[in-house]
Length: 168
Image 1 (tube, rainbow, N blue to C red):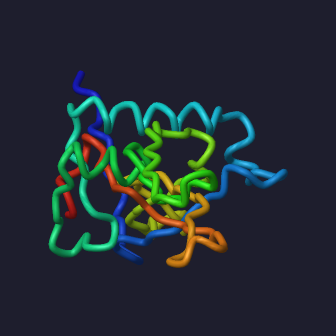
Image 2: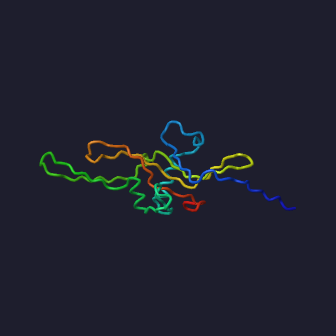
Image 3: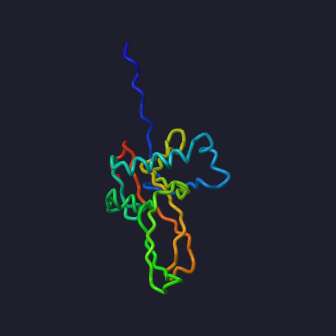
């Protein structure tokens, strides 16, 4: 006796490439994140990206799928050397000071998701299919005259999940 093949439900595409962000730093995470170690998820995503084993792309240019090199990803995550010029109080001469910076996981303050949304026509259930995930980095940066800092919010890269063709 052959088992009855299960019928796939008829799904209607409601929206393609829906992108939104989820904050990791607020006191109240959405209910669906309460049992997930979101900071560990963010750290895992970054470690995977900087391992060089997964392709990363520009989040801002998803339509053309611009790849980001490992060096670009690491730099966008904050690793690098910052050099400053100061005046030596004793000699009056200019001194250069360079500071090496590593990736600061505390700067990852959110996650962005790219999803397709479907409607199951028979049950009226909405099904969300996650296609890609991206970290959201927030950090302070000195202004042009170095007298003030401004909060910068950026998405260093987007990583498509293995079960999806990139950008499809």
